[in-house]
Image (cartoon, rainbow, N blue to C red; front, side, top):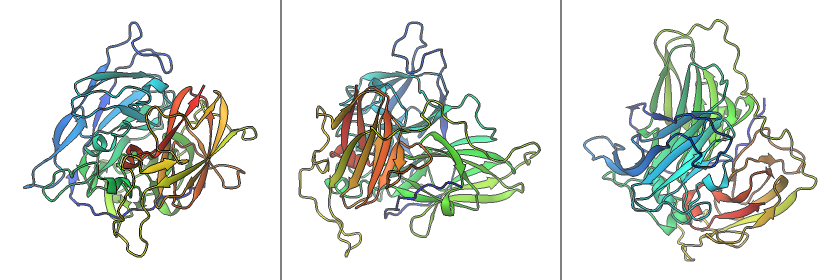
Length: 479
């Protein structure tokens, strides 16, 4: 079976461990007829739903510690928005915080004006103001909602403003439960309050690594239950500010059905592990055993292993008669079957900046003495609103980017508005799945290829938001 190239490595950190019941919330958006990527405010369109970003309280430490003051989108700790392919997203986002805000629909091949990069594709939503996002996703899949404002993304994300957008296939695979699992981490002090934001030391190094991790807004391990013999679809997404990790499936035979929202030929992960960088998503299919009892766990490979979720089979067994073996999701016909590289526009990108960890002193901080607003560079320049694009390409042109990571840390990059193939090092093939996020270890290089079929100014940006805020991004034009 095809297996992904594992490139992520766990970063150090400690977490609290508390058993709480599973919890998540879904917001179903009212469907109405609309053309793909329809412009806003069409005559006769349904009124947009409202989603308010505002302060809230969340229990992240056990009593008698107080609840933590956070921000969230709507009433749920981790909103999960579900629509059917072909239905529009129409959301009036109200900013009830004291910071500028915009929401990026991470992985959606969106209209440029709806991509949600404050300072590039839209004006940031000022405190007390609102903005209506109005688009129809062209693809089914699992996508992230992340705050993205030039110079101001880390704090709203670190305070909890994140969610998932699930676009269901017209004919989804037959499963007994379709579960969304949104991973976040929170940097708390001893009293359970969020630690201050804006530290250059974090931005110049590993980023803001949390001390408590949650799934769907609940401390781990999350307890998941389903009937014996159930077939489950798990949609796992990493919305942490900075933490990249590896996950392992203990006692579970999980098959990857989609990577970054796009279908792939179903495969069983090598050694039952997967890399999970910030911004990355997986759709997993698995069958629970026919007998009641503990079925397995999803574990983060940190320290001796940190259980993220446990799965238990309980209740009346599911009748197995007539169920086919786990297969692949339908191919996305909107994406090309191949990319012709012969006449591609080729550009070399070099990532630089940050501090260099002292290998002889693991865990020791290295002070950063440069410009705190320009910690990171792509080809010698820090990303800035109003800056010139790195290159321009005609719509429909093929682009190949050779990216070299000259920094002292693993770097995770996200391509906006498009999906790409990860090329083999000899330019003689590619990995058998589409991606929108790639990890590049320190001192290593990667090549990606994509068809620039979406007009507008698009970003290639760090998914570690402290690095994004301090310059690790660039842009390109599709004309």
